[in-house]
Length: 360
Image (cartoon, rainbow, N blue to C red):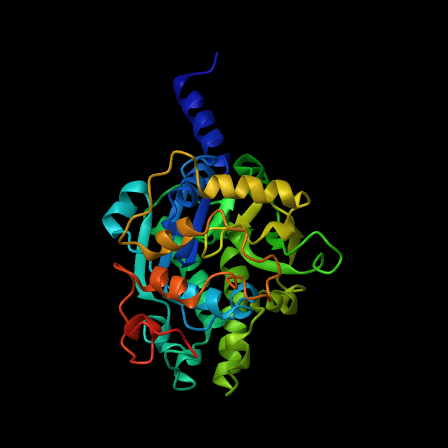
């Protein structure tokens, strides 16, 4: 018969072998103002036992608009630049009580600790030109490092896997995402699309790695950018497709391209990542329902990000990422929503949010 000490040892061994996942949420908050988007993250976290959570979020977007959805449309870019996540840190902490949260007004080279890096010191960046790709991946590496260090310092059960996700993502099938993560023996990178054109390309919207490899995997891209910045070249630091840089380290830092049921919700509250799903029409319907659940409360007047998303959630706008997706709507509507009461304050005189005029 098993004695008490042996039973405790067996139970302890079983507990220690249970996968434990850490989650880093980094990026510009934009759609995180939507209750459904935050609820989707909570549902993913609920799939894991004792998950660790670290958030590094920017209330306002950078001025780069380098992503395809935003660079292809002046109006979408303007919305992305000026949407402002107004939720209080205490309110966000109440929704995610175990999280360690950092909220900054804007992600740029004036904000520590990025301000001390080679890529931020390399050239006099300004409000309209920032090394957006570097800032994005620097935040990812910082988050993962702080998550791992914090868990170790607290003496908690070691993490087995680390996820990096964004605050504008919804999870179409959280159990399937969780199974893929805890079953991964190598890093995972979301596949950009199922069609032949995109099948071999990755996207940064969702990444995961075994904890033993996480620090190396997530720091590879910003370290490569920093090397170039140190040598006087900043081109890589504001790449429009920085996720492609993972390929350069694939032999030493291997990963698997995979199609997971995760989708981005863009600044107007619509799914923009269904290209990565086999059933794109079903993806549109489900992702829209997750982002805007039927019982959601009305948009907060003080939160321009939620106001923007709620206003155009049911409007199909345009389908091609390089079209001006708000072509049916006048600049007056765009400026009013992005710059209305409770929106972001600006400090440069030619900004439409200050003078009420549409950009030239």
